[in-house]
Structures are given as structure tokens and as C-alpha cells.
Length: 359
Image 1 (tube, rainbow, N blue to C red):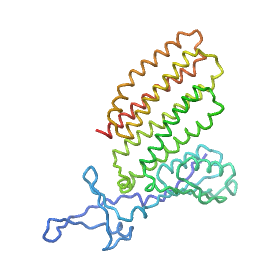
Image 2 (image 1 turned 135 degrees about the vertical axis):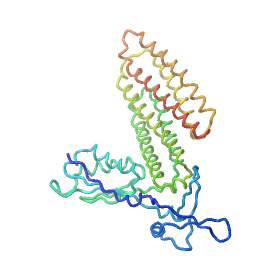
Image 3 (image 1 turned 90 degrees about the horizontal axis):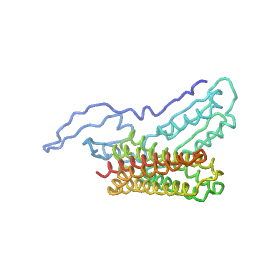
Image 4 (image 1 turned 180 degrees about the vertical axis):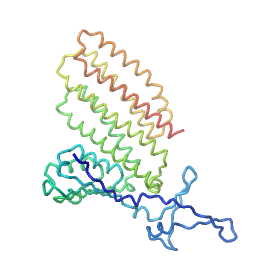
């Protein structure tokens, strides 16, 4: 199968001006001035009356950008060409679109490569593209033709700050965990399972959007500065949302394992012990999440200290299950306990990221 051709129109926008400038003394004062690159001035249509903003970064470097940069920021555009052999490879289609989304492209064009095969996109292919776009926050299909699909980012990140998106993914992950506990207690999988999985998909959706904006902020430093973030913030947020997303992924695995074995007759004491332990892990997880959001040093340190004791409690429940004659019926709960151990590891990672922000 041939690999789709990718044409990136953003190359010109991403080139850095690697030039040096000599400082010149201004009049009789100690003020020093320098000239601006001609191509840069022309690109943003600046003249002698224009103003620029100057921001000092944490490392002491200066960031110069036009005052109208927010409204006239460069657009990243990419085109993907698919041939007939690619239409049925749904995983490849999703990978290509998602990669271009994460790479910060504001416009993604999907075109049919000339050659053998149908004259237009098959219905199955078009429906899959629509499904993928719906899973990526901020993207919309703005043009749908027989051989060309135009996808655009309609979300203005300057109107919706990254901090707001981070708070949303945190709340969604916490709600997903809490609702999963309630579901396991009630054992009513048929009623609440669908709504629970929607929350899981929302975590994934916000994770990809935030990751995209953080990556794009590194490519456009002025945009990062206007969001009130620096490079260290980007690293900390990236670790934070990754931990949240992986926690949600692991909890979904536990949900599927418990759902499969729900017809087995289990010892209520063991089930209750596992569910109670899950509730304790949830409290640690939520405390870690809040310590990052609200920069609470006390909570972050408490999480780091609590994790080893939680592992000891988990081993006691596992020992009780191991002493039973038939342990296969408890496999779902054994998987749950292993998942909760991973959640504790992620909670510790979140708390460490919180401390980096605080200290």
C-alpha cells in the first residue's frame, strides 16, 4: 500500500530568521537601537508609524512581535493526498488527520490523488473523515466535495485560554473516575455505561486539543506569551494532561474487565473492600489534580507521601483473593487493583508536576 503524499504549506511560516543585528547608539543617551529584518516588516505590513510589543522571556531573551499579531497570525495549512488503495485503511486515515491536527495546522485539505480507482471518495471514507473530525476539538468540515475535503480550525485559542481547557479536562477526568465508582457499586452497567464512555471520549478530545495548542505555542512564541505561559509551563502541562489521559485509558480497561465478569457470584466482603479501596485512590487522585490546578504545595506533598501506604493496602486485598480456592472469578477485580496501582503512579507524577509549578 502506498503512503499518502503530504504537502505542508506551513514551511515558510515556520522558518526562523537566523540573522544578526548590530546595535547602534541613539543620540547622546545610552539607548541602543537595532533594525528589523526587511522580510519580517513586509510580511506584517509594518511602517514607520507601526508599533511592536516587546516581551522579556525568563531566560532574558526578548520577543518582538507586531501588536496586530493576535488577529493576523500566520495560518498553518497542510494537504494530504490519498489514492484508491488508502480508502479502506481507516487507521491510516485517522493517523494522518490526527497528526496534522497535533502539528498545529489550521487548515487540512484532503484530496484524491489522480490515477486508478474511483473518480470520487467512497461514502465509507467520507463518513470516517467526518467521524474523525468530530473527535478533534475545534475542527469542522467547511467544504465537502467529491474529491476534496477542507477541514478548518474554528476555535480561537486566544478567546478560550489553555488554562480553561486544562481545567475542563481535569474536571472531566475526575467526574469519569467518580461515576465509574458509582457504576461499580450499583452494578447497573446497562443504564450508565454509554454516558460513562462519552466522558472518556471527552477526556481524549481535550487532551489532543491542549497538546496541539502547547506544541503550536512552541512554534509561535508570541502566542505562548500572550497566553501567559512559558516553556516550563508547556512541559508541566504536557505531563499533567498526559497523566490525566492515561488514567482515563486505564480506568476504561478496568471497566471492560469488570463488565465481562459481572455475572459471577463473588464474596461481598472482597468486592466491598476493592470498591472502598478504589474510593481511597480516587481521593488521592483528586487531591493530586487539585494540587496542580490550584498550586497547593501541602496537597502535592501529601499525595507523594500517601502513595506507598496505598500500595500496602492493595497488597492486603490481593492476598485475600489469592487465598481463595477459585480466583479466576475475581480476575476483573485483580485487573482493577493493578489499574489502581497505575493511577497512584500517575497521581504521584501529577503531584511532582505541581511542585515544579509551585517551588
